[in-house]
Image (cartoon, rainbow, N blue to C red; front, side, top):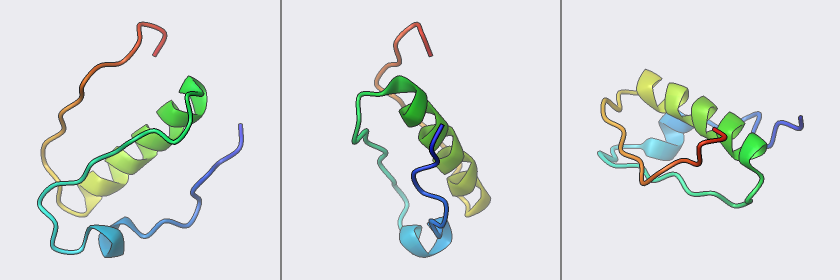
Length: 60
């Protein structure tokens, strides 16, 4: 699997934000799942404490 964002600085990207939204740029569930999980872990490291999600397919 190709890693899409290998050098994202989530601390810099989030800045003073209290809310971050994740959106899919592809409908490839494997790539989206990989990137979403990575992003959530990094956002937690920079202080985000809550996560809300609309829905995930059963295959995830």
